[in-house]
Every structure is written in C-alpha cells, then in structure tokens.
Image (tube, rainbow, N blue to C red; front, top):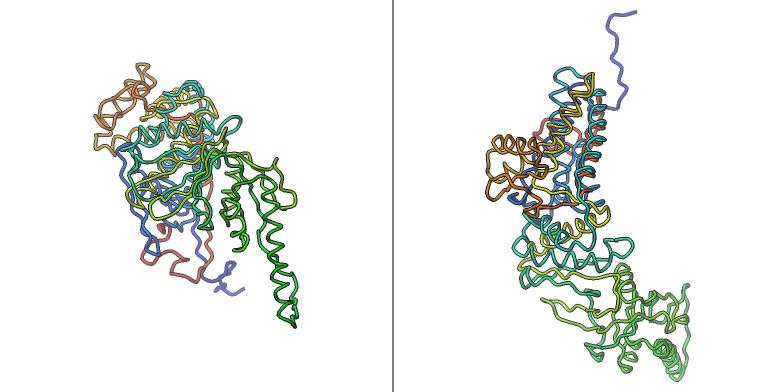
Length: 538
C-alpha cells in the first residue's frame, strides 16, 4: 500500500468542525458573553440598552428577553441561552435577566472545573443534584400569599417595575396591575384576558385600567352616534355585504329597467340583513369582516353603532368582557347571543380614534391603556406592566412568594454548600460550584449599584449565617437590609423556573463535545460576521 494515503473527506466542503475542549470552550464563551450583555440591566440600578434594528428602528429597554430577541443572535450555543429567556417570559413574564445571568455563571463555574480535568458528565450530574436540591430549599423558605393580601401583591408588582423606565409611576402602575389580575382571574388566569393597549401622549401617570375593552378602531359611519348607553352587543364574524359568486359569472342586462331591478334587489338583500340585526335587539355591532356602505347607511338610520374588520383576538376579548357570543351566521343571531355593556363610545386618544367598551357587569377581560410622552417610553411602560401583571398572576397561581434583593440566592448558596458536604465523590465539587454561581445575583446587584461586590457579599453572607434568611442588598443606600420588611417581594416560581431552566441549558451545553457547522453562502466562517473568531459570533 502506498505511503501517501489520501485524506478522506466525510463532510461537504466549507463545513467547520470544532471538537473536544475547543468546542466546549467556544460554547461556554458564547454563553458567558450573552450573560455579560444583559447583566448590567439587573436590579433597580440596572442600565438600559439601545438596540438599532436593520431597518433603523430603535428599541430602548431594560427587559432581558427583549434585548436578546432584538439582537438577532447567530451563535448556536448563545441561541440556546436566549431560549431560556423566552421560556421564562412565556411561563412567568418576568425574571428573564436573572435566568440568563445564572446560566452564564453556571457555565463560568463549570469551565473552572473542566480546567481541573473533571469530566463534563460528572459536572452535569452534580448540577442536576444541586438544581433538584435548590427547588426544595426555595420551597421551604417561601412564604404564603393569597388574593386577599393586597399590600403584598402591590409590593410584588412594584418590585417588577422598579428599575424600568416606568419607575416614576410605580405606585399607580402596581395598583393597576393588582386590580387587573384580580378582576380577570376567577378560576384560571389567562394573560390574554388583560389587554395592554399603548397610546403615545400624556404621561405614564395617565395610564388607566378600563373595566372592559379598548380597541383601536373607529365607528364606520358619521351618521352613527359617538356614544351609546345600555348596549346590547352583537359579535359577527361574517361580512355584512353581498357575497360575490364563487365562480366567474356574467349577468347580461339588456334593458335599463333590469339594471334598476338588479340594484333594488341588492339593496333589498342588504335591508334584510339589517332587519335581522335590528330584530335581535342589538344596538352595537362588531364585525370581523367588511360592512357594505349601503348596510352602514341603513344601520346608521336605526341608530346602531358599527365597527368593522376587528382582529380575532379583539373579538374574543369583547366576548369575555361582555358575555356576547361570536356568531358566524346572521340567520342565527338572536337576543341570547348579545353581550351587555353600560357604554360604548368613540374617544380621540392622541391622534387616533379608539372605541371604549366600558361598565361591563362582570368583565372577564379588561384593558390597561398605557400612556407616555414618546413612543419609546410607552413601549417600555408596556413591558413594565407586562412584568408586573405576570408577577402578580404567578404569585397567586402558586400562592408562594420570596423576598428579593439577592436574599433567596444567598440563602440557596449557603444551604447548597451544606448539602455538598454530605456528598462524596467529585459531584461535591460541582454542587459547590452551583452554590457559588447563585451568588452572582447579589454580586451583580451590588456591581450595578456602584458598590464593592466583595464587601457586600461577605456582609450579606455573614447575616445569612446568623439566620437572617431575608438579608438582601439595598442598591440605593448600599446597606444590607431585611428585604421582606423593605417590600422587595417576588413570586416563588420566578426563582424556581429561572434556576431550573438555567441549570438545564447549562447541562445541555456541557454535554456537547463536537460542533459541526455546515457552510453558509453568506459571510465568511460559516455565516459568522467577518473579523470575529469562530465561536464569538453574536
């Protein structure tokens, strides 16, 4: 056999492959970079990010998941960390930065263990044991909360808003968030039941809760009243128009009188449609499809208010607020299908007309109309409200809360260290590393507030050793406080979800020892931006 053996190519040309330690290092580096990016936004003294999209649209935000989604991240391992933030957002609605920062720190601690030649599967096993123990510890330190505890619920909402652009109005916004959640959550809370409408103009303090629905539509005909009381509302998802034929058809008209008859017939059909509506007793119609001009004219004559081309989500929200049933066929419309509301009126908010459906008897869907001086302020206020509402709902769902300000994480670290001593074998080191990673939250809170993280950490740890489980860091004064007394309160499941998903994604990344990237036509180095070493593409 000849000496010069031909190399064998198994993968297509242009494929990049990183294996073993290099693959792990790159993936860990990507995860740490993502975590570093959002770390500075954590806590009441966190800063904001300005992200300019490819079309020049600007987003200014403090919200972890918004930052990561707007950044359009390319690196596959970094994308996995972004998924953690998305899960946190969907499950709870808040705590996305915490989840990402914890994931980044778990990777950093794992990297140090890898350098000591500890096998990734040992670290993964230790992390899994630590994550399970962490859930137990968190549940054991949590306090109970119910829908009667208005003060605690307001503190939860206010903790969520703190550090966001809307902080100036946090008293008002937290009260609205609590009222909104309590209004719609009888059996099961559904976040779609609280509609957040934003309108530029006014100040954040002008944000209001409408016990009913606000939709960004106008009344279709100038002859219709702009306000109507004692409303009986019909929701129709078919068009109030003459249907066109399905197949191409021609109508031959040979005589002007036939033309007249044809038009009269069309008018008569529309009149019949309107009569069906009138007969049902409805005085307000929301139509998901179009409404013919002639039909509008007839309805206006009867003093009936009409809005058309509504989104399906708006139709469902009106149905939940007023008790109206959505009807697909006009022939079936009767009084039982109608919903009730005290007032339906059109108001001009900022530049646009909006329809307010208010004074609903027992609305299962409400609207928060978020206001603010500029578009960016309104957007950020809306994100703050989403977080606050998510937190209050999450707290009521599990009925348990913990204090914030880095207290639960420090307590976790302390208890996990104790637990690690009961383990033999190298897993003990992984559990210790997990415990150490938990301290990144109080450490980051201190850093973002311009305090010395080492001083704060040693002081906060000694308080916890003395049995003060709610000792946390006050970012404003730099002192160690009892965060429960200070009203820094968060739902338990923000913490449990953040730690479990951060731990899961870390375990997944640590198990990867081979990255095979197919070639992309775009950009050099498999689609990475030019000038970046592989593994750094963000």
